[in-house]
Image (cartoon, rainbow, N blue to C red; front, side):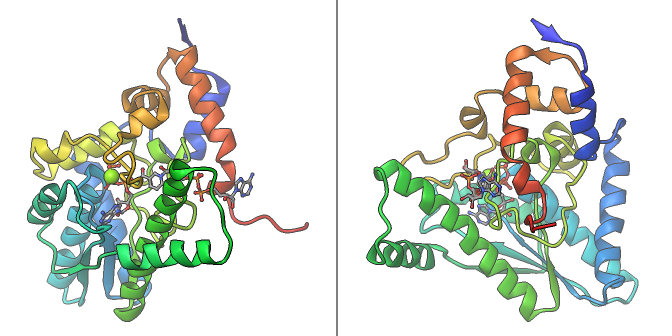
Length: 276
Ligand SMILES: Nc1ncnc2c1ncn2[C@@H]1O[C@H](COP(=O)(O)OP(=O)(O)OC[C@H]2O[C@@H]([n+]3cccc(C(=O)O)c3)[C@H](O)[C@@H]2O)[C@@H](O)[C@H]1O
Ligand SMILES: Nc1ncnc2c1ncn2[C@@H]1O[C@H](COP(=O)(O)OP(=O)(O)OP(=O)(O)O)[C@@H](O)[C@H]1O
Ligand SMILES: [Mg+2]
């Protein structure tokens, strides 16, 4: 059974800024100009982004590189820093190397977030923090990894007068599928307004091959369930989410899953609350 577009659906689409129409070349140009303006208008000189090997950071990374190249053509000095931020040895490291070949960043930095993440977990346990079981501990460690990546990116941006680029976009934002102040923490989000299939179309138009644009999305944060797909965690597909965000009819199950996730994670898309 499917539901017609609801007013709630329209409100969510509007709140997340999903555009009514889409054309890949136009989306690319708009985002390159956005990135150029963010540096030039603020007198800054670097873009900083973690590259996982996944679709979102590959796409955002290539846009960043094209933006700094455009700025340099205009005699404005700008550099893109692509950060590899593995937790120890990354299972799909070859995909991350391939993504870097596609992006061709000015600079690559490799920072292993495992020592800092493990040290943080150890000190929490020494301080008396207890977990329900090994899976609970692994989940909490996953969010620590995401926040260690945030710390590394801000250290690089702070060193080079840069901006931290985030890969948040409506298909993840609607599900609240990011770590608050982890990968959710950033200065600018060039993929804003795009759902997942549109990001894939942008990647294709930028010349990404099938191994990048067809890669299964994964947060890959939990060591006990490595490479677990986002869709497995959601219980619905990105196609379902994309349809919803494009105002199409979806099943009642899909609608309920999305709306529940959206409501539950509202706090992640807002500023911290304070007394009025
Ligand atoms: N109602 C409320 N109002 C204000 N704040 C509220 C709140 N409820 C919880 N909170 C706060 O939020 C915290 C929970 O949020 P958070 O720390 O983010 O943790 P949480 O949402 O529990 O976990 C993050 C989820 O995002 C996924 N993720 C993370 C990173 C990357 C990706 C990816 O796709 O790449 C996916 C990850 O797999 C996991 O399922 C609570 O500990 C609490 O401090
Ligand atoms: N191992 C990693 N190395 C570097 N950056 C990472 C790593 N894992 C996550 N990140 C950063 O966190 C962001 C959020 O991860 P997320 O999984 O949503 O994106 P992705 O891996 O680029 O694409 P996809 O969602 O399709 O897997 C990434 O875009 C990237 O900037
Ligand atoms: Mg990923």
